[in-house]
Amino acid sequence: MEIINKFSMNILSRSANEGFARATVAAFAAQLDPTLEEINDIKTAVSEAVTNCIVHAYRESIGKIYISGEITDTNIIKIKIRDNGCGIENVEKAMEPLYTTVGGERAGLGFAVMQSFMDSIRVRSHVGKGTTILLSKKIAPRYTVNG
Amino acid sequence: MSVDISVNGEVTTAYLNGEIDHHTAASIRNAIDNAAELNMPALLVLDFTRVSFMDSSGIGLVMGRYRNLSRRGGKLHITGTSPQIYKVMKLSGIEKLATIDECKK
Ligand SMILES: Nc1ncnc2c1ncn2[C@@H]1O[C@H](COP(=O)(O)OP(=O)(O)O)[C@@H](O)[C@H]1O
Ligand SMILES: [Mg+2]
Image (cartoon, protein in one colour):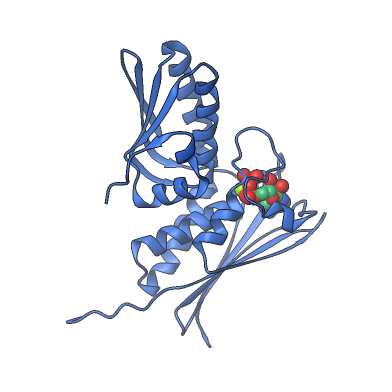
């Protein structure tokens, strides 16, 4: 398996960047010729991960969110979303559907969306240091007749 | 993002427009709640026909409106969802709390 393309960027944890981040990753993924459903799955998962950096990792402060992506010759897109925020004490618990640590109107479904819309998710987190989310999805090759 | 409200007797409809995420959810919530407090609808309809994207922040928004409504016996109906939005709605189990139309293709 070989990496055939990559990008990386960083953004400030401002909520206005949620739309920018998911649109950018979707534009990168477009070169794999995904279906509309596949592109929407990626957009939704990225939106969840980036929002978590803004809402949970940095809270009232503003920090940097590092986003990178890779495409392999096996038609897999891998996306990494990292923050240097507060970290997650109990990752297993945080990933349970409906679990949320903030009041207001969080649904507690961000991780559930990432899990069900992507093929795989890995979470690495250290309290006080930050969190890294690795998402990957295989895009089914589409063969067209007459190009 | 914008919200248009129409009132027809007991039914208040909120036509949502744009993308729904954590960034836009607060202003949408305020627009819907202001209309609901004013009109006290028996039925609140959230129309997603012109919503191009929604993540789980939208689920929080719908659940919050459901809680407010059900406190005074009001009902919630969801319509006009795209396949992307319908998929997020389904994952949340919201159809146990509100009625939802099958998504448009
Ligand atoms: N990047 C992060 N940094 C710190 N905590 C996080 C991060 N992402 C998620 N969490 C924790 O995991 C919980 C569950 O996240 P999620 O499933 O997205 O639900 P929600 O965002 O609605 O709370 C959050 O409430 C928060 O406590
Ligand atoms: Mg979340």
